[in-house]
Image (cartoon, rainbow, N blue to C red; front, side, top):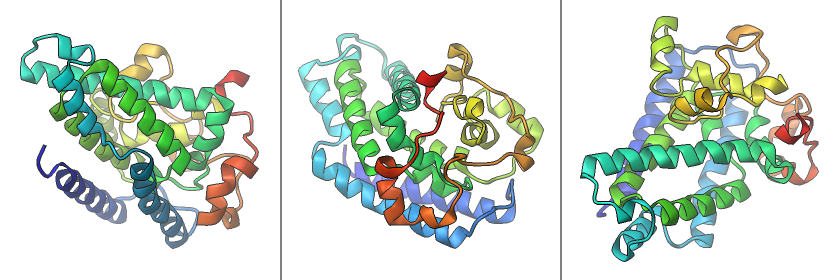
Length: 271
């Protein structure tokens, strides 16, 4: 697909700037730590991840979708579906895989060690949605490529899915204030900031809920949905109980966090 990378970048920067401005003019919570310090570390991680992943996987997801389409790999490539229906089904199936992947990163202790870098953020805003350990990003890409080869979504479905996933990850991590009535109905269609914020609660039962990134249906379907945080959105504590030192939130300390940090009691296998 021509200019696929440029299309994704335009959507990325457009959504990032929009949510960042929204956070300034209508914040949901007062941040407890230095935004400058957090943004420096989180955005540096965001810049480092793509070249590392590209070095390991020179084949992009959309390139694999083209190959799968040409060679008839995957479930959907063996059905003659209308284009629109195929795109919708492809996006929904890929989103379900992302949900299951997220649960897996909470369930397997070794994977949780990588994922806890994302949860160790002491505040939650747009940059939290971009803050993932490089090794987690590599594993995520391997899962995504395997899903594409197995499911056979079209290149258009893959492109739309990646744009939507990236956009909703920034949106639902945003420190933005949505009217309660709008949030109540919107969360039937997409994961809202209030819905996902519960997932970043220091309370373990809340950390292990609301795993969806884009579509909110999986949490309801699989019984991992929690409507509101126990202490309310204004009084809830964000992050992990074992990581409360702002000095350990530097770029270098975050990279070694999976190997030196206490995994706590969050992994699902403990419950």
